[in-house]
Length: 208
Image (cartoon, rainbow, N blue to C red; front, side, top):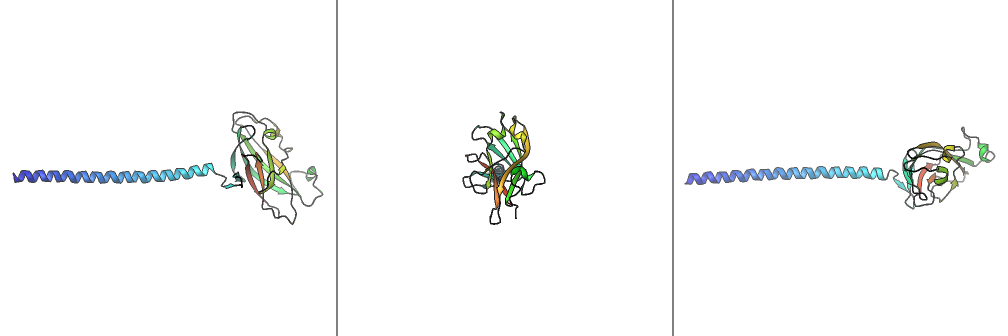
């Protein structure tokens, strides 16, 4: 009888030990999975933050402020279509190699400059639009409202219908007056000017 009781006791003890080891393994696996899921969630959130706020900077009214080379997604305030814009490069000059300064009635003014912005516009909507008619654009000193009208004369495609999926690239030109007394850090090239959808590209002032 004692031998049977001893054998039974050992069997029960063995089962208890095996069960405890199994629970430890399960807990460790669960913790590992939770840790992995947490890391994956953090990485996913970081990726989403990067894609949703590529501009990084905003204006006083919360408008996105992009840098040269960045692409912004914009929705027309007046017509509800969507499009993308990219400022590829820009120049602030009073002696352009590409354009005749006399065309801007500024040849005799020492403080007269032009801002040349090379821009790509991509129609991401499902309808046509004409950029010069349907996309309000202006250039101002950084922080100012409204600004100077953009000159489309050297970007004829801007006056044509842009179909869904199409892109156009060309120069937009704006007058600027810069004197020795001015302390202008940057200019703003604005799409959907003075609307809730206003989107800005920062053009650092390169005039010394």
